[in-house]
Length: 223
Image (cartoon, rainbow, N blue to C red; front, side, top):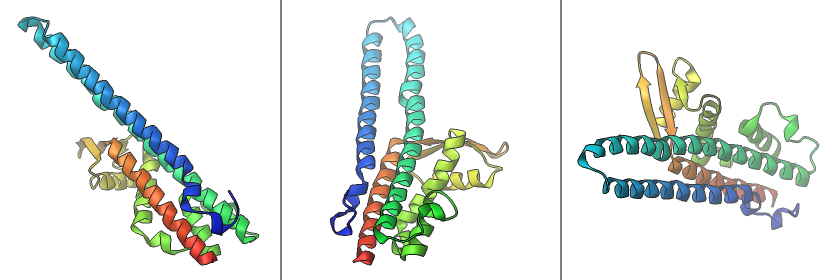
């Protein structure tokens, strides 16, 4: 990458997320194919057994369907959501490092207090007057993803609603069509959140759109 804003676009920072999107698309097709094969296998087997044996086959199919169609995908998509957020965090840090290198300022990202995406926001806002991207709906959504990531990466989606950060994540999940809430117990104050594929794909779109907005604003400020 040339350290010259005239030759830099959001695409220069988008490569990791681009490959990650390709991986997620492939894995989604694998899961869909596995479920199709399972259904075909079940229907074929069902046609060859007696009426008395069918009840047992239905129970066996339900168990396999739970693992292949629900449990394994939910584990995978939770992990992919965390990985996608981590890639975005790395990307925005890389943008800060390039801005620092081009600007020639003594103060770099590592000199700011804080951590993660908030530290990057503070660095760009305070040292380079890059503020507009952090007032967008994209950034608002990304900060929600950050809270989601912080809880998911430590709990595998099992919420303890006596903790404020877990309760906040539950409130976020309640607004997301591609996140399921299961076993929500108001007495025990627990709940499980199940991340679906579309939540992961939606987060990747948000990251990429934000990167384009951010880089465009940096280039405008540096022009």
